[in-house]
Amino acid sequence: MTKPKTLEDFPHFAATAVTRGVPGTGGFVRFEYAGKFDRGVRETPPDWFYLLFGEREAVCVTLQSLDDSLSAVLTCDEKDGPGLVGKSAAYLWSRWSPHQVWMVAEPLWIWERKTFEALDAVAEGFKSKDVSIVDGREVKSWTKLQAVRGDDRSSRYYPASDQAAPPNATTRIVSGGWDHEHCELCRAHIDAGNVGYCDLSEHWVCEACHARYVVPHDLAFVDEL
Image (tube, rainbow, N blue to C red):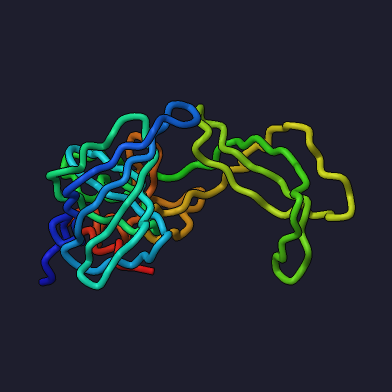
């Protein structure tokens, strides 16, 4: 049986020095960290990724330089310094978000097995500045769909059916318009009437990913493309 992947198996960055810049817009400060990775990472300068440390702490950093010895310079814009010097922080590549790691790694994370039920959605049309190609056709008019559930975390965008007509900018309710969720780990649809697992923040995982990753607290999903 394969041993579950834990945060200890992630590449780690050990910061040895920090340079603090001057406060900028909104009170944000540019912090520059010098240090070294203990193994290779996916990104190359000037890509961004996350560093995880402490109790559910994370910071988004930009890789400014990385040499053959794995010495690196990272920057982040924060109001308060993350305090990375002297710590070993786990590297999480930009394909994933910190909450996806915590939800799988932590044994006390609360999950409920339930059937997904379609939600009403707020729809609003708009026209973008740029042209996108969707299924071989040019698209500038879109419909934004947002779930009606008391938060603004979830929104989706669909090409308007009639690209020649002006977009319907009127905000309107679409009954049952939010008809599926995506598994946080594999992105599979959890359609209305399907069973999945939901946490207290309305994050969903499918039954297969719950069994494969959540139950054994296996972070191997981060290696998936």
